[in-house]
Structures are given as structure tokens and as C-alpha cells.
Image 1: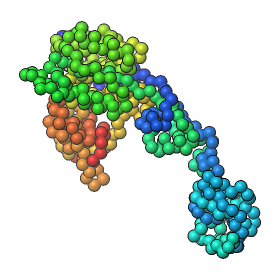
Image 2: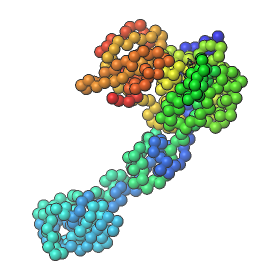
Image 3: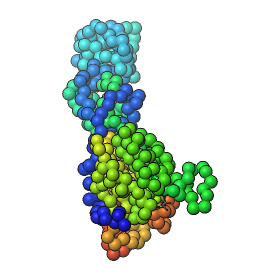
Image 4: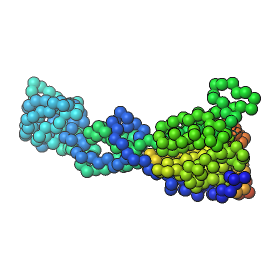
Length: 404
Ligand code: AMP
Ligand code: MG
């Protein structure tokens, strides 16, 4: 059969191949309101100092440290947004509010709690340290400082700092537009009652969720039948509009498995089989104009695990993320992990805290059709190919999906 002609590639090698051939998408400029979650496309450099003026940290009086212990005449007030325009000189003070500009001449702000006021005379403590109780110009940022690096995902603090430095719009990477297609004559729309032999198209919804979480903008093509001509018609129009194609089903070795020949016809297949469990039939191709295509296996767990291992990092590369991979942590196995000969296996586990350690317990049967093995899983434990059982108690590396 045709598909078996593809060489079995090592899982790590296949992942590298995918990333090498996945392009980084260009950038667009968006308003801050549209920036959350996006990835910065260029280094953000400060043009001015932050704070831009010496700014009081407290309510009190701006004075000269040399006037410690004296009663000083209050000349006026510097409130936030309404600076005192005069100068504080020896023997004088200006009332100041938090965020107010420290007036020229003053070198210290005294907290109101430490003063006594009688008429227009304020008495300050006998020990004052110049520079206290206000933020110096440029204390947070100096002009020319690197604020945020390209590849940073924009969260609340990053958007806050961009706003504070007067950046109303930001250059961010384009989000990948992905066409998602399910294949299989046995599939029916979720919600319809399956007739004998039919199953709901669950991969569409699982992959839609996974794609969105990874930052993609998804164009759902629906269910394509197991017929070469129809399959091709399904994708051709869609390919014009997208950066990537993700399919599920139709990649294993069987007469109804038409996705590999389709991708061969549309472009170049670089990965056709992987030493991976679950997910051996995973297929990766490049199409024209820098587009990429991922043929995921039909088994629900296989499609999501291959999504994690290959597709998610690729989508993150497209978006310019500095960090492509999920974080990993060392965890202690709470069960005997049986490896598979010749194939790297990603076993689904729940994590539990035990003292300072994380202990991994299997989610049960690791069958590639059993989505329950992935539902609620905190991590994927990478079990290298081999024939030696990895005993409970061994510390292994886990790809973290969420933490308990
Ligand atoms: P295939 O890769 O097409 O041979 O499919 C392998 C297995 O996954 C079969 O049992 C299919 O019925 C099942 N499958 C394929 N596509 C989907 C889908 N979209 N949703 C749920 N199960 C699927
Ligand atoms: Mg099929």
C-alpha cells in the first residue's frame, strides 16, 4: 500500500523538520485594545524617561533637606496634573500630593504625617535625607531602554508599559489563519443522531479548541468524504485564504486514506510516518507560497497529541513567539511506565503534589481512541522507545499542560 512507502522518522527529527519548514508570518499594527495575547513583532524601545518628571510618592511637603528641623513658609501646592510653577528656596516649602511634580529647588518630600502645620508655616523633622519620597526622572525607564523584546506575548503588564510609554499601536505578528477539515465517510455533524456505523465528528471541535488556544484564526471546512476528487475540491478554494491546513483522518495505511496523496498532489510531503505513539501516521507537507499542511491521524487522542507535539509549536513559530514549546518539569513516576519498542510514547498523566515534588499518575488505558486518557490530564510524559520498564519512583521529564 502506498502510505507505507514513507520512511519512519524519529519523533524529534520530525518535530525539527516541521519547525524548519514553517515560516514566521509578517507583522501588522494593532491598537492596544486588540493587542492582548498577541506577540510583539519588534523590540519596543522607550523614547522618553519614565517617570517623565520627578513625581511625589506621598502626600506632604516638598522642601530642601538643608532646612531639616525648621519651620518653613508654604508657598503653594503641586497636585497631580497641576504643577506648582514657582521655586522652593531655603526657608520655604510647597504642599505636594501623590503624583505631583516635585518643584524646582526642592530635593526631598516630607510625609504630611511627619509635619505640623500652623497657619502658613510647616515644621519638618530634624533629619531629612535628600531624594526621599519621590520617584526620580527615569527611575523606571530611561530613554533608549529596551522595554519589551520582539517575541514577547502581550499580557496586562506588557500592554500597561506600552501605554505608559505612549505607544497607542503596536506591531504584532499576524495570527495564522488555518483551514480545518475532518475526513471520513463515517462522520456526522455533532448533534445529529449517528446511523449504524457513523460517529460524531468530535475531532473538529477538539482541534478547533486546540487551534484557538494556540492563537490561530480557524476556517472550519467541515466533513470531507473519503473520495479523492471531493477531498481536493474541499481544500482548493480554502487554501487561497489560509496559511495552514489541518486535517484529521485519512492518513493511515488503507484504501480510504487519501490525505497523503492529496498533499503530494498539492505540494511536498516531508513527513509521512513518525516513530511516535500515539500518532504514527502524522503527515507534514509544504504547499506553495509558504503554506504548510498537517495531516493528523483520525483517532481522537492521536490527533490531539500530534497537535501538541508538531502543530502547536509550528503555530507559535508562525506568530513569532520566542517560546515555542510547552514548559517541561521533572516529575516522579507514580506508576511503572512501559515503553514501546521503536517509538517515543507520550503518556497522559495527572499530577499531584507530594511535598516539593510532582508525582505523575497514569490517566488509565492509553488507547488512542480513548479521549478520557487526555481529558483532565495535566501533562504528557515522554517515554523514550525501548524495552525496559521505567519503574515507579523514577524522575522523568513531563510536558506540562496545566498544573494541579
Ligand atoms: P482514520 O485515520 O481515518 O483511519 O481514522 C482512525 C479512527 O479515528 C477511526 O476509528 C475513525 O472513525 C476515527 N476518526 C476519524 N476522524 C474522526 C473525527 N473527525 N472525529 C472522531 N473520530 C474520528
Ligand atoms: Mg478515515
